[in-house]
Image 1: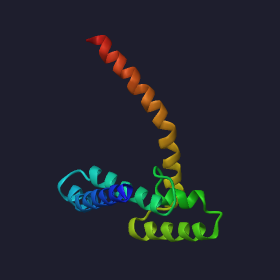
Image 2: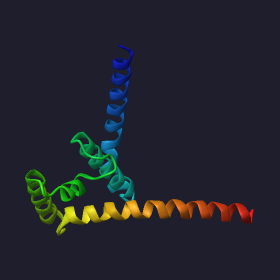
Image 3: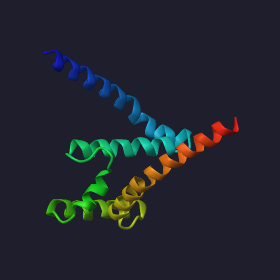
Length: 126
C-alpha cells in the first residue's frame, strides 16, 4: 500500500510540473530567446517516446527513423517528415533527428572530458 501511495505522489508531482512547464514553452518564445521553450519541447518529446516504450534520452522522430524497417515506424517516418515539411519546410526530419541523437552521444563524452580539464585549469590558475 505504501508503494501505491508513493506512485500517487509521484504522479501528482509530474502533473504539477507539466502544468507549469507547458505554458513556459510559448512564453519562452514570446518573452525570451526561445531556447528554454525548445528544451522543454524536446523534453516532452522524449517523455512521449518513453510513454511509447522508447528510451528516455531519444526523441520520437529519431526512434522512428532508427526502427523504420518495421511497417508502423516506416509509416510514421513518412507522416512526421511530411508534417515537418509542410509546417516548417524541413526535409528528412526523422533522419536529421537521428543524426543529431548520434552526435549528442558522441559529443557527451568529449564534453565531459573537456569540462574536467577546464575545471583543473581554472583551479590551477587560482
